[in-house]
Image (tube, rainbow, N blue to C red; front, side, top):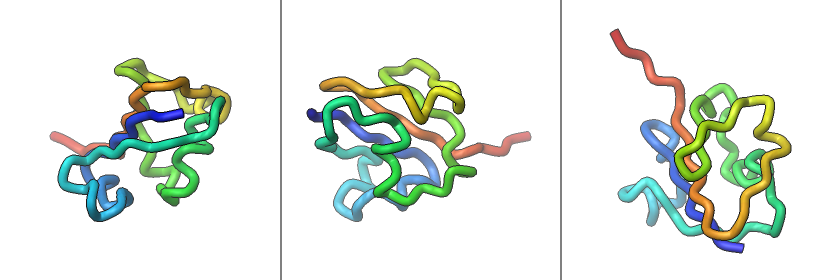
Length: 84
């Protein structure tokens, strides 16, 4: 199945070079793939996976190992961002 995978801020560096400029890429994943299964090949440091959204809806850390995506979903991930 096909999804859109988006990484923001410093996580963009984990995308293939050809997709870093737009911070997103189309991705083919197995039917029923979970968030953790999808991000594993990108080797994102889990401490940097802070805000996770599917189609704009927040996914709590406890649900990321079991929450499966479906065709055409958009998975977006932000690192922790400091401000002041």
